[in-house]
Amino acid sequence: MANFYVTNSLGNLTVKFNITLRYFVVKNEEGDYLWILEIGTTHEDVNGDPISAKKIHNITAENLDDVIETALADLSKQISWAPLVDDKRPPFVSNFFPVGNNVPIVSNIYVTIKDKLPSAGIDLSNMKVTLNNSVQDFDITNDVETVDSYYNEYKLKWVPPLRVYETYD
Image (cartoon, rainbow, N blue to C red; front, side):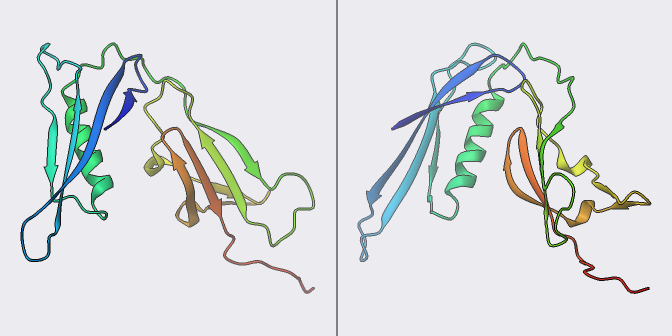
């Protein structure tokens, strides 16, 4: 059994959960394993009642992450996370690369977007990325790739589709 903690990023409540992954040998010709996942907490629900643990059968390596996420979401919905804090600050660009003058034309662009806690998280579906070349704005939103992501931090990458190395008069 392992313990982990869940904190609502818009509040000050942290809830302890435990998780156990057990296996049993099924008595059949192959002697297959039957995996059972159990996630629970001793925290009370919104009415002050105990929250029943989730027990999930037929766990595989392919669905383990999804099963844990679904079970944890179901358990978390039963908890009163109040009082919540309003998320009043917008996300911000915390880092970008390359920086400075004389950047090689072969450079890709990397941007890190962060959101300070307490936070409702970053919604990339509402993000618009615009490139300005000092003459015109270009919408490159659909060309930006998410390289790495956390709840309140996203690392983005843009690879220019066309790199002009020379110009002719």
